[in-house]
Image (cartoon, rainbow, N blue to C red; front, side, top):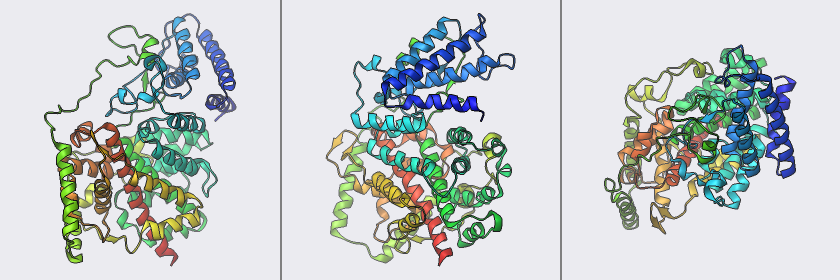
Length: 555
């Protein structure tokens, strides 16, 4: 990255300042630079869509800047910056230069934009509805990253969790740790690429370059250092079949002569791999849209219906066919009440009788076997694009292969190796504070409740949350001796199981129809909560297998 690019990035970063005068001074500097670029183009036809043809390099550079300004009009948590960016785009349009417009509505293709009331411009709302705590979290995230990404906006339904998530991710990526910054982002790319998650890959490609990463590494994993290439095998196993990870895999990384990993580096890498595998699940499970300023997030082509105006950015009129495609309430009437009644009956059964240990073990094995047979999606082959697949090897390796061949998943007893008693202390010893942060994040997702189910209040949802968490761990062969797995079939219907299995095991196949087919009477915020549970349960499951293998190597 040259000095001019670095200076430009620094200037954008200054918009995250808490000081109003500093933000305004930065905006004025950006305004002057944009107007200079517009004047350099001269009186001509509107600049072509990005990337511009080779004959118009100034336009190409300008388009990148205009796309960034567009992103700020929709995503910046500071209203003064939003207003200045809108005015600047209007001024550019008035001079005959075509400005970009967003593609799609809001940060999710599954959730209507109107649900995200907290980031709509004040012009629409009259007053800001976002609570003080959420606003502060958004401002902190924007200051740290120079963006308020779509993942954070969707997680914003649950500010307590978002705060814990952002704190952990910031520490993993930016604070002192065993791995260099560019290694961290490259490992994020490798992990996200296992599930063809272009959203996360693109974010970390940009971050990797910003921290001085070698662009050649982005040509493919074979261009990266041997040390990172050796991580490819456990990346593949953890993403798809973590029960196959052994102490021999760990030994191969720690005793690789000049390319060897230290224990602390490996712990950091494993946490990053599991973080981004599970975040890919959340990204697909919530239908996260491309960031506005990135590929697929905006276009310079005018809409077909009428001439596009900058006022459409402010008013959210960038897409005409907005509708909520949920089924009518008549079709799903009683869904919540049926689920609540089952929870009540199960609680009564718990109080009346207790199954024997042998019966509990049998129920677990039955549920584990049945979970292998749940079809993740329409039976279709998924071919990853070359752009994504170059970041990993062995494209054919996935979850579906073993289940079709009927391979047995061994049982992992939590009583023998648990996060609380074993994994937590190992991570904290080798990567200080991270074990604590992960534990808080797991607990936050697991215990998060508003005591509501759809329109019903004062509901104890702990039984349902535990069933979801334990079903995911069951798919990975993980058993809790004190849990009756017979409850899962009572509480999770087939459409919900299909969604869970797809999102956790083959997230790239998650569709809007699958998202809409489960819990049809529930709020979108409740479905996002489900996705947080799925993400954290998956991460903990992968971590348990990785940390057990490391412990076995050490003993």
